[in-house]
Image 1: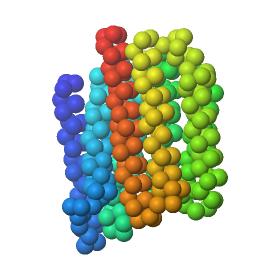
Image 2: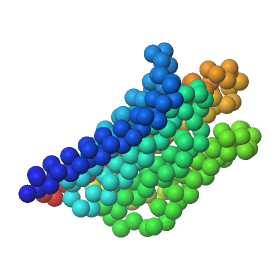
Image 3: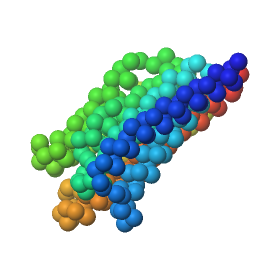
Image 4: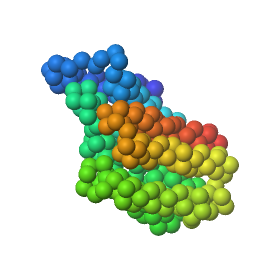
Length: 265
């Protein structure tokens, strides 16, 4: 019975995915623009959009392997990659058709997915301990400060240097919470070994993986380099960072969820 239900779910998912891709192909083809073999930025957009789709299917299907308290974490991981995939479909078309940076689409994506990634810290701790809701709000506020600062600078509403500094302050606030704040203390004192290991790896991604974004911002807007080449570098850097910060981040959560679930079965 369970296998039949899972099989029907897979079939429906594949059908929905096929219909979705079919609906996007005519809009792209009708523009008359073809991805060029030397457009490495455009190629990176296509590769990563497909990787995000595959990751979404994986995370949603793997929910069947984990116990109830871990299902929300895997669902959120799947939502992160799903939302990112949809936005990448639009971003890749903007780049291939115009050669310009899809700033608005990218920040809309981040405004949804990055808070969800921060919520994952709260969720994995909630699966093993009573966690104060203040941790959730502090991580969320730090995330919004970081993103709003970056957006107003890239979109030209504020000078790039002040916006860059505000965004960095939001990021540093997040790092404080997960390395020295209440979230870090709960992990150290109450979490089992697998959860502690996952938490530490996740915060390393937030430290070094997220550092890629300000580096991309710096080289794209603050280095004084040629604008065309800067935009190419900026988008490749952002695209590669999303692989680490969304797909790899979710895989870490999947690994600890499945490991902890196996202990309870």
